Length: 637
Image (cartoon, rainbow, N blue to C red; front, side, top):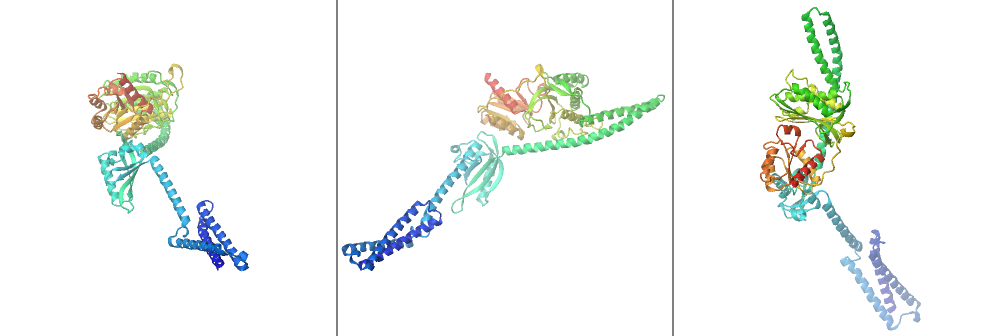
């Protein structure tokens, strides 16, 4: 009897342990973790070894029963002891087997595999959360969390870089600190839309940096929901779009210049064809008129009439020569010419003809400025511009002729045509006349376009100037304001010269701003952005005002180290603004900027001589050197 019980118990234990082993190995194997899930494999091996051991016990007992030999059988108390123990062990195995059905522990379907997978998924989820937090923190975009009350609840590193506030300065503060009253109302409206169920709102707006300068951003606003789906706040992703806008504006300006060049080229081809055809017709008219003059020597009346015809033909020939110059079809004889000498010759010619009601001022360069050009064409440029200036000042005024050397950075928007960066000779012709509106400025170089009364202009003077300058590899820039005056700037390549005729070397790189604050006053938005970017990149803090009254408001609230202001502005001019600020800060350095030449502003007493001044268009180095010089002089005094 004991042998049979011993055999049965071992068989039950062996089967139970084998089942447990299979329940472990099968899901782990299906998951492909037999090599990696060491805990599951070790547990399976334990049950496997136990199953084998109890199988051997069963086999021994079976042999003892079948042999019917006393020396093979288990006898005495030890046989009963082993039998009872194996029965207990079998009961434990049966009990353990029942646990997996009741609780699904260890032996439930995929139980051990699922437990390990959950651990892996939790670890992967934690790593994903850490990675996401790092991405949010270090992205260039500003990522901001707001409560529905408008208070800031999250502030990443991108927000610090974009708006200038540290996280400890921003958290808990209202989002309205980043904008003005209009922007605050816009923020509230967007939060209301999100609270009413909109999934997201995208728009562009102007926000404020910590130092008060404007920041152009695109904003993507989305709701933050809790586990029940209730909107508890909003997330805001803000991206700086200043560079994208500036790139788009540069592209637009480039396209406009390209279209202008194409239009001028088309007009040039048309004018060239007309000029050549007219030359053929005029040749016939002039020669037959000469023949008739010879035959009418004894008829004064007819001869007088033919003389008028010949005079008219000569005028027509002059017009065709101008057309050919505009279309680059006329013969030129370029040579090295000093602009100072050309300026002096034209001044002598104009002094006798321009009229006493106009003050003529010539400002040659300090050193010879040599270009490769036709001397006659240079005179034609200066004379055409001077005559136009005279006609724009019927009641008198000032005409300033200047020669100097200027740097071009290659990004000037209003240069016609565009010039590569470099150093160029420059002629400037400025007047205090009637000025021109932008629509007229855009067309002044087109042939036959004129604003003069009928019979007083052909519309070929400025188109001829354009043709001469572009043929010489140069470009023109026009700055005009109705009621104030006009400045023409002619840029020509410098000739390769040596000795004392060589131009001065480029100035060294300007020193950094070292965190000093500049109050910039400029009413043209595009130019204000350029100035702000140049100064900020050089290490200055910028306080930007779009008008003189706005500048006075900023000055009353914040201090600055220097004032950089436009000269001609509505309401209050730049010099008047400086006077008002000097009442509170007599030592405040001031730098003026204007599209009019320094010579013109000085002669018309808009600015005092020797005052810090930078002409538009200016390069980055021009502006930074002038601001640094003003600050240095102020410290020295």
